[in-house]
Image 1 (cartoon, one colour):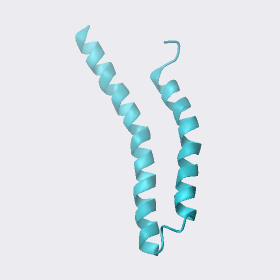
Image 2: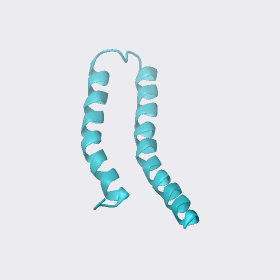
Image 3: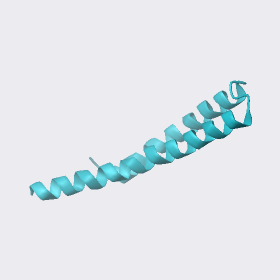
Amino acid sequence: MNYSFKQLWNRAFLFVGPAWSLLVWMIWSSGQLVTMADKMTFIGIVIPGFLMVYTSGFFIERWHHKKKTARS
């Protein structure tokens, strides 16, 4: 592998991020979110969810690195 995990993870999110945004926009503008409570719940799940998925990659990298160095 020529790149570090961090570089590959960030590049993956460069492509996933716009697709995720498009999906969020499609759901938001579809009329399915009628009340303000629906919209706040949607935003309260989507934004933290995206951030959690993004940061989980770095936790996985750290865990894998610790596991790899413990074996050596």
